[in-house]
Length: 137
Image (cartoon, rainbow, N blue to C red; front, side, top):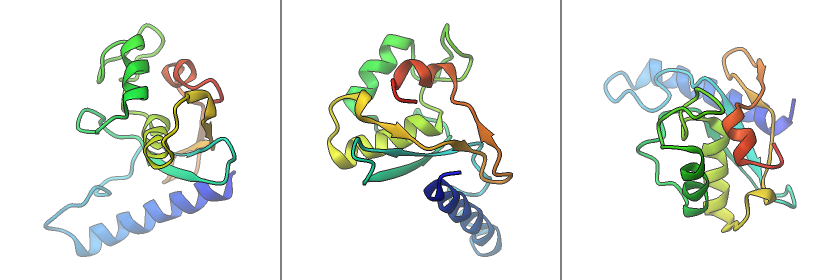
């Protein structure tokens, strides 16, 4: 397993425990574990940004991703390729984060870590939507 994704999963676990212990009123975004976490790298693989699976309707998506989402179907809905709703995947969130950070213009300049369930460290294959969106997945 990629060392960066391992560290990110450990961060999620620690943050979740702190939230349960100290933040009972606010219930921060790690109130429950995300299903999957992923890290997206730029083409040089020197810069990376993490992401985790969650509802994507309230996310500010970068235009390059929205254009590709629209080719697949509707944000928040499954597609002919996969029942997973567009915009919910960890890969899509981590890609959005690095596109914003590095001003990336092409999705074939993105590379991904393994997709990991933080609680169990189990590795998951990317969904078919992500396989259609990202050439290097």
